[in-house]
Image (cartoon, rainbow, N blue to C red):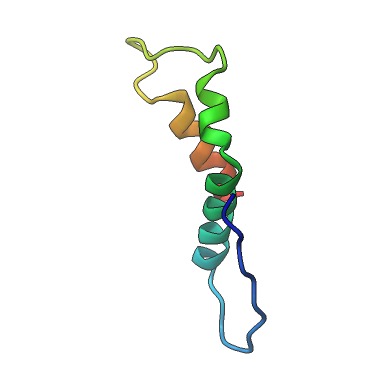
Length: 62
């Protein structure tokens, strides 16, 4: 497992920095591989996006 280093700074921080930290954390715990084994809905005519992509983007954005 990859260790995530967090440092404090007096510089301006944007929301993008937090999103990067969240994405790194999700990658380090292997949540995408775990979710690949779940019985999620498959793409169809009315579901054009991969459910894993939707979940990962949602988690990263919150």
